[in-house]
Length: 439
Image 1 (cartoon, rainbow, N blue to C red):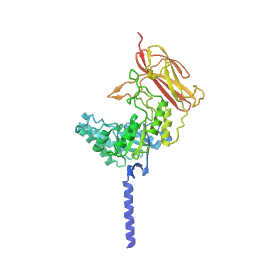
Image 2: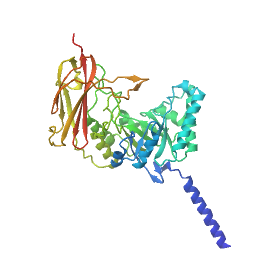
Image 3: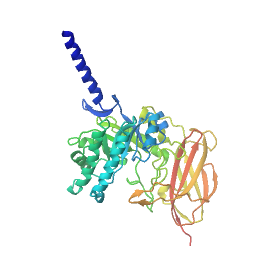
Image 4: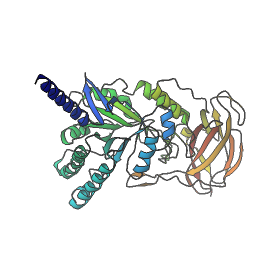
């Protein structure tokens, strides 16, 4: 009889243990001893991430472990590549901005959106690469009752994910740290954590988090960070063209921000994502791009790798000191006459010569290109397609010097220089100029 009781107790204990293991989510956020920890498959998982869906093999080799995507257009192939490279994915579920009340007041459209997202979540919820879901990107969260239908639609999606896929947390993103937005997210939404897309304002993030902890002290993610966006007080020419830093300056900014401004020791942070791991057109094709469209790496890739691994960066590729156009820099507001012969030069940080071994690397070649200024926007969204370069203007390229003919059509342009070494590295710089038509 005593043996039967012991066996019965063991069976109960076994069943309870089994139920516990079954109910434990694959991905969860726990607060333990005042610190938030993201767990994945039972192990702590601090996100060392990159925003983008390409070069996942290089991300893995660099010490990264996660990517963040904004939509589900190619989610099947992205998840496949992520699994092959041991990379986790935050899957973005795009929804209209909250001020699109014409949409949220249309019950048929909202219902269709809900059904579509429910189908997608249930299709991919068991994929090993899925880390969490991000509902919307850079939404605003107003408090006015007139936005109730937006909040109802938003929370219905969040609640659906919690019910259908309890294995993965749900987040959403905001631009910078905004108290009102944080307040409204906490009071009026059911997300598991808040995510910030933050660039220049990262310099005040530590103090912003600390000063508002009396109201909100939850877990958070930095889903985008890096160099300044053009809108953040970036210097401009007299004709309002943004002056872009060189790839060398960008790498220095990323290193400084990670060491001095990133909330690395904040017990509420569960990780971050550098922006942008790949190549994209936004103001220019080089502004945010850590790679070019051929897969060559800028210095920033090595810097990001050092932030993942904790090792000192060992970049030995080309570095640009400055770029001159007719002896002037971008800040000098360079005006050119149409069809005039113009001289340009790139100055390197090391005494390098094209085709010869230098202090840093062997510079193999320089590619010069002239593009019209890209100001095109639709619905306040930047152009995502690179404009066509203006062809037939290059006269002669020798070493780091160039002579070219200014375009005939009046207007704003940029001269781009891309320096390639023999090991897959590039350095980039560009200078805006304005062409005045000759009378």
